[in-house]
Length: 279
Image 1 (cartoon, rainbow, N blue to C red):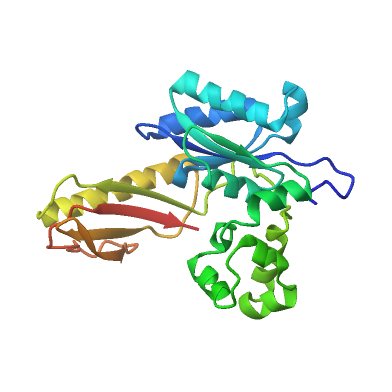
Image 2: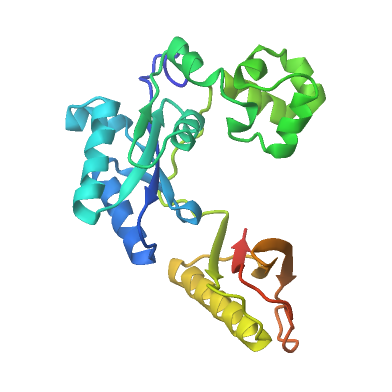
């Protein structure tokens, strides 16, 4: 299982989420540098201020087990930058992700690499906690009384295939048994990038709406150019609220050529404007 049954040593994969008081690109880069100083294989995930790190080779170098090395990393982040984090570690990417999602800021969850430890950790968790199982897939499984990761593990693969399809069923079955060979890819380009702005009051001025979205798109473009990334054309999403309650969320595509000013909303807006680009 992920190196335990085929002669390879078990992996130690970390998913770490940063919880700073204020988010800046410079700070995110500095936090990644701290992580890279512990484990040299680091995969940034800037969309949600997190990262994966493969600590397998670092354990022997630092002379610590996974729990001890994660503790060192958390202390360094706090000491150097005053940033708390939530961390999850285990023998696979999916287990590390589940552990990180279940861990509050300022804490860490480390899952062992034996089948018993993996099962004890994840079997009772809801099916939606398994990476790759979104809300709609979880609803489809629930119609067959498959509501936990343990249920997925116990369901015959042929039954899962009838519900999910061949590829998704094989992926879910493997991950429910703690099998996930996906590596940590250093410097991997995220599938999407986004930036947003939240008004702190109801804003009626459509010109300000337009300037805000245009500024977000320009900032996103600068970030893409700086990283040397190519993406499909960006889009904008606006969430309009009415007396503090979300009333609508509309995606407005940005054409490649300028086609004049687009009036996004004439309603009071105190929600978020965002710009995004995807692969």
